[in-house]
Length: 420
Ligand code: LLP
Image 1 (cartoon, helix red, strand yellow):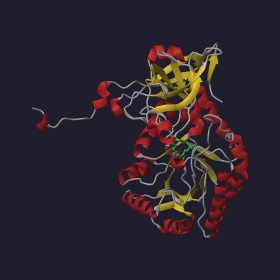
Image 2: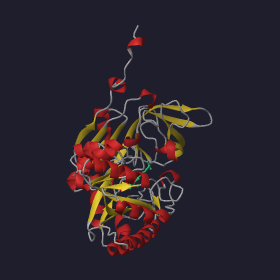
Image 3: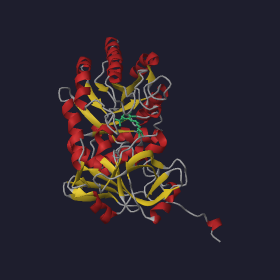
Image 4: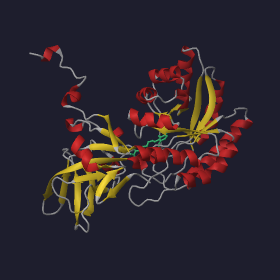
């Protein structure tokens, strides 16, 4: 459940009409609901109340430091995948001992930064990475805590770009190799093996892939125990899906009910890395129709937001509902492509979408844009990044200002020889 709703045909975020935000801050803009972020975090937290757990919010979904600060205030840690994310998490006040670091290509500097910051553990994705962490920890005269990420070879039945737990994927260590890697890890002088990690994909809409994966992982943890490698933490990753259109993913409680018996049997402290389920429906992208274009074959609503602001439709053919900010009762419908100003045919927010007829100047809300939305934005076509605004009740706060043209060239430099 989220806090974007109509009141008298005007779409609100909590107690503020989106039209008012558009007037004050312009468009396009990302708008986030404080109450929705809070509610979603607490739903996950409460669902898993019967097992000791740490929620490490997958900040790749939304990494604005105000959002991270909110997460920290609710008790969240962070799942990070880069030194940049570590920097943001620490700036936001996320306790280092609730930070876990995944990703197949951590470099020397990132490993050093993470060890020095005192993160909870690394999620290690290969034998080569294990060696690198051992080396850096040795240089620092310390031991690094690691969980090995196992690839359980489970089909999560989601979009191939966001499936990560199958054998052909670059992620994790294959089930056939993982025991060997654990042996290696246990023998390394500067490594302390503390956990097992398994994340199989994102936007999962069924419970069964989680159950299948964790059943395999339970077997692995028991085998490791019998070999004298006790496992303190089980990191179950993220991946729980949300409703973008008509999906009916399990609620956090349903997932918890299905997997808690397995989790308990592991006797581990559980780390989980939800991203989308917390952030996805906590944000929208507010945009205005610039022109309507009818080429005789198709009708286009050309809006001021584009693929550089929200790339999910272009990249994954992802569906985002698009709602009129001011709804007209019994409005006639028509079929539109909702497209942006970027010079690419792939620049669309929706294709062949049946929606209430829109006209120039109308405001639209692109829904479910709180996760993997602003974080995947770029400056393509030299478009300044749009602001992020957090609404709390009847108040709104700019948590990232709109970029200026000067921001676009910040850091660029014309060498002397070109200055004639
Ligand atoms: N943990 C790990 C190791 C991950 O790789 C991910 C997501 C998560 C947790 C969080 O998964 P979530 O709970 O959000 O499903 N850009 C894509 C999604 C990429 C997900 C990458 N990894 C999209 O827009 O759908």
